[in-house]
Amino acid sequence: MDGIRREYSVLPKHPQKIDEILKPLILNDETYGKLKEKMRADMNMGLSTDRNQDADTKMYITYVRCVPTGSEKGNYLALDLGGTNFRVLLIKLSPGEEVKMESKIYMVPRDVMTGTGVQLFDHIAGCIESFMIYQNLDKNVAIPLGFTFSFPCKQEGLDKARLVTWTKGFSCSGVVGEDIVELLHAALDRKSIRVKCVAVINDTVGALMSCAHEDKNCHIGLILGTGTNACYLERLTNVHQWDGDDEEPREVVINTEWGAFGNGSALDFICTEYDANVDNLSINPGRQIYEKMISGMYMGEIARQVIMKLVDAGCLFNGVASQALATSMSFRTKYISEIESDEEFDNFVRTRQVLDELHIRDYRLADCLVIQEVCQVVSTRAAYLAAAGISVLLDAVTQPEVTIAVDGSLYRYHPKFHDLITEKVAELSPNKVFKLMLSSDGSGKGAALVAAVAWTRSQAKEE
Ligand code: ADP
Ligand code: MG
Image (cartoon, rainbow, N blue to C red; front, side):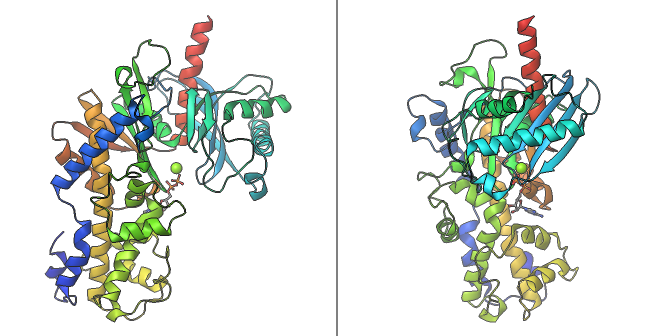
């Protein structure tokens, strides 16, 4: 990366000053190695019983005990709440065939998001009812349902999850501390619908299950979207808080909630002034520090912080920023993908378009070069930080070949994220064979697969 801009005939002003401003974001392998050690220690703490409360990464037990085998069959419903849209899905599984899915997006009105829990779950049950009518499903037949509920939950079983706190604009009363499955079942009862929620999962588990259905080596699930999080299959002997049965397979999926890493002081050694500014601007200062260095919600703002510093130092736009650029959160993470998609010498079409959207009219070719370098430095650090986390999880997984399921728009749309992560994981875990696999619709298909495995197990036990 170093020196890219010097291949051009147009040199930016004050190259040394630019290097100085970018330098804190360029980390060497020794630093990534140190980060790995800290993260590993924190995760071990999270897995322990006595030190869990001191850990940043809470390592929640998901009660998902195995990945799908591909032999799952039947019709399942799934709910996806807490992502960008609320959806109800019907998933048809048959061995050896492609998964068939039908889904419908429903609105959650603002007054329901902030009303009572009863209103929310009645609304959800109403959407399930209308979806079942639309799909010609008999409401007197017990259909198993998997629930992707992407809010922090403490699980007590696969079908028992207590909400820890609402996020993302929801604030329904009477739900925090309650089992959301009970609340859903009560609402379904009020409408005499015999649907049975057999599993609650989050989006990382959904991604993992969805890919594992096609690739049995898939033992790690990763989200790189608005936020970042990961889950992996851990041996029960390492899960000191395990309170379930000891039956085979003696493994369970752990939801690391790794976005919270750095809530203590573990990331202070790499935290830059740009990160500190982003954190101060956020609605949850001091929390989700690792997430704020990596994920889509914040990456654009990190880049903007750097760009503003360069403007103030006279290294960009003749020292003058547009009002749009000077406004926090105006530099969207998708701009980074667009700017980095500009090939060398193609006249910076996309970069120019972004600058245009930000009302920057007066710039030189050298400015485009510098902006592109800023984006590269910020996204490379994000990808490498995620790679360090993956490398920690790879060391924890015992099998020789591991597939990592990845979901989220940042991974999906950034032109280099996949390659950057792959390259750095290979360096940090030289003895592992791995690959990253894009997960499609984990929150729907994944939830149905967990429901299928749980349902099949419970039916087998009853017989
Ligand atoms: P969610 O995480 O809410 O389920 P997504 O996986 O779609 O949703 O992630 C949304 C995030 O992805 C947004 O916060 C945005 O920052 C980021 N994003 C959207 N489009 C792009 C893009 N083209 N390149 C990089 N990041 C993107
Ligand atoms: Mg998502």
